Image (tube, rainbow, N blue to C red):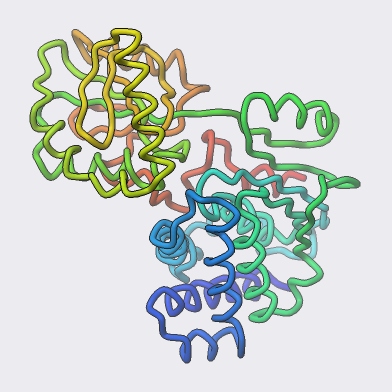
Length: 357
């Protein structure tokens, strides 16, 4: 398949996913064939049974984000212009590239699949057991749109072997295993990362409402979810706390509410000072990562200190969210879970990695 043909298939996949979200089954099946909507319907249902954090609203939000930020013809075309070597399909040596996916949020490994498929390599996909149904369903729909992808995308339940390169995403602990298994072949091995936000006190109510999305989307389980705040020493928390208190709906999820109550109990027993919004807790801590239902904050005297601190911990940070601080690669409030095609995890350009194989 040529790059144009591969891209066209993914554009059609995007149109299908948009129609699926809009519950326009006739239009969806006109794109991907009879039964394609049923494939996705079953996957959405199975996803929750496999992972209780994958409630339908979050799954649909993830599907919408992929369709709207990754699978638009113009967006794909402009992104691919940065990799002119892909246009000469005759010089591409097809490699088997393993993709070991995480399962913390729905379809979190889709961008890696998109990169490998568009690069012309053969993707050997190992989904997480926590996100198995959705990625398989998306691949099955892609097969229906472009049957030739059957020869270029293989989904397996086993650890990829006999591969030429690998892209893996997981914890610091799992990364040690990946390094021992795949250290002698080209690899991208991602570890734990967290996201931070820098507040100055100049943020409007709308800014903080958007920040709330960065905290609460997908129950805060993504590495792009904000888990730590930098605030001035004289910061007034009142407006932020009032806005966060509006997100009581997350407590209707039993597992989230259990986490919230557990973290609160620890704070009380260990006599740790905290703010309680009724839906999330805020504590003073220098840690960048935080468990579910908890966000850390630390105070600063000047923004230069924050910039230096962030610079020294770049290998632990995925996103930096701010509006009133001049910092490289900052993400706007409310945009952490809407990464663009060139927002590569860990700031490693996956397409350059693939084109250099």
